[in-house]
Image (cartoon, rainbow, N blue to C red; front, top):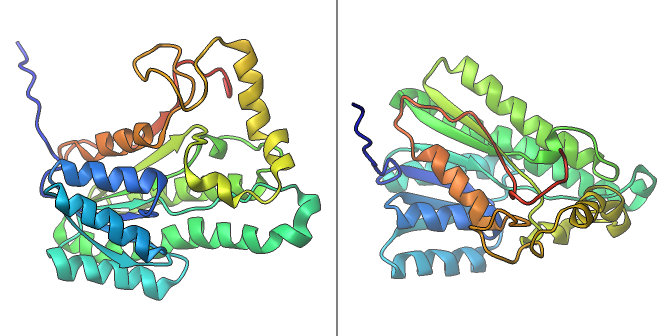
Length: 278
């Protein structure tokens, strides 16, 4: 007979989270700290980071922050060095930083800078941060890199071309890292569905592009399935309509909360009452 044993594999791990000033990153950092991890929060907004770290410490958790623009290689390297200097190692890197500049190709004159920022943050930033922790993890003999992709990395959607590319990119960076590191570095790709309650929507360039592409599918789905208002309702209901940031964070934590010998390599997170992207 197999006896089920529940163990907290998050406790005492040193976890670096990018994009930690809001959304999935913030929720992941708070949850990891509550479970006993030592967390380094990295993002560009210092005041938000200060506030979150203070609240984590006030609640009895262990956390520090470093202001980081992951699109700058030198800052990604400084982030990794800060983590090692502070806690002595890096067990997990969560690459969450990203933007969502939805716009049509016809918007290129106004969207190009935002598109370039998206690529710089998601692809370059993920590459820089991964390389910044690579040597440390290989020297330790174990590590774990989690890249937050998107359900929109599965196929092209109108008005989301650049965002699609950025999310496909982080997926393949993770998969290549796993095979090249030969079992020393675990990797996980997390693909959230739409979560409109985060701040990611603030980076949309053309709301018409959003409505024509991703959000059109959301609203169409709402007409097909009798579920709760997106972002509101009972998370324990089979008709739950749209995840919130904590739902995504819980699944990132699930991937971390495994023995070192188990790698959850790919997770898609959606609401059970959702009918889009079937």
